[in-house]
Length: 531
Ligand SMILES: *Cc1c(COP(=O)(O)O)cnc(C)c1O
Image (cartoon, rainbow, N blue to C red; front, side, top):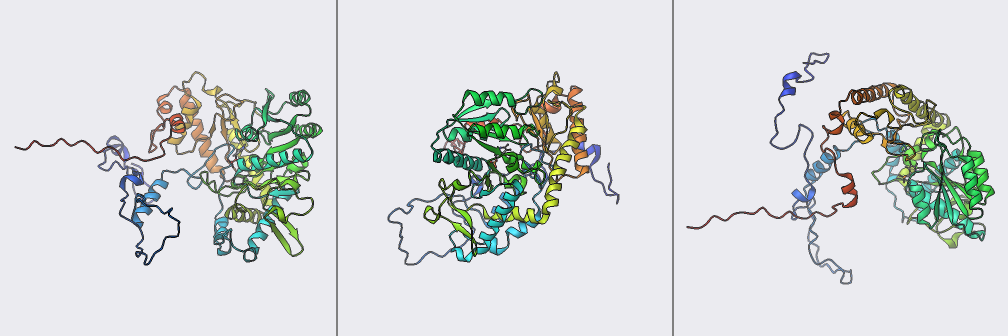
């Protein structure tokens, strides 16, 4: 039996291991089996008591609902418990290391949260008169200033709600610029290692996507292949969409030549800025020839990843694209920043391509991102990038003798990419390996992306992790690799063993999701025959 330093037992010892009772509730200690709200909510219950309205005349012109809403009701403490219990099944950056490559799952500093909750920021409404929210406009302007400063660009569209939305915004600005110049090119070039959102964005705007081959030895863009493709489609190329550092965690070393070749072809350089965390304070994309780049505030600037929720993906723009930035935007005025909300409010030289969102963007995320920037300062931001790169290389060096690096033992940027060569003949796949990491209490790394390497495992520890945390992670990974190599396949093929749910049919969940709850058929009751 283990004891802590005060002599208190910390585990039940071997006897406890052997006997695992089946519990009456199905709960396992604090690990609760939580039903759906529809299964235990009651239609006649609500958390608040409201008086029946008196002399009430509906003003909905006959569109008011006639039948009951049939939403399950809970008392306040029941609602509280339901969601808290569900939340305990979540893995979060606040519960442990989250090495999901390309996603930059870094710590969200609590100072940011405190600033975002200040009533002057937290309680404002987008329909409030501008004269009452001058401070908020000023804050958006300051954040814009630092985004442009850090990227070496001259304009920024703040409203996009996520990286992918920013891609759409940047590519729409590029399309508008071509149209304004009387051109109508049909092709967007996308390297093999690109994130799926890049070709999806191009296709959504009606462009044909042409792939650029990667160099076999390191996964970067093959400059000669790029030049050949440009020559082949001369005059018909709208843009290249390139991630730098790329999704293999490597800096595109020919980026200046790539930009020059693209510009010489009258095309624009869209940079996917998802990996900006690796180079903040070290390199400015504007200096590298980038015309447009989204910045995922929820990656590089530490705002929370909201489970698809409140993201923010501002797009910085070069001089050439700046006139086409969408509404609303902020213009420097004599008496401070002015918010331009409609085409009627534009002046000579401003040619917004339209509007992407109803309002001005995600105020709460702007406050958090600016709080992060100002509390770090330029030296702190540079150190964060350096530490992110250092941590990724620490993991690489700690694992490279046992796992396989597709492009050899060279330094990486902020994430390290392994392939599945080291699992050859073990019967364990990348997926199995990731599931076994869950049993060890880790969120898996990004798997099977980028597509340029077989069975990819992309690990991004970020700068948030201490050396001790990285050492434990490396030791755990080494234990798993040795176990796979020893042929202990059951540890992997059945994993995860300890999570509330085991392996789910992810394909079925994606292809035929059941989004509506239907009451199960009542159980059949056999009537007792009367005498
Ligand atoms: C995260 C990511 C995106 C998309 O960003 P979202 O904010 O999730 O929409 C695009 N490209 C790359 C390389 C990414 O890692």
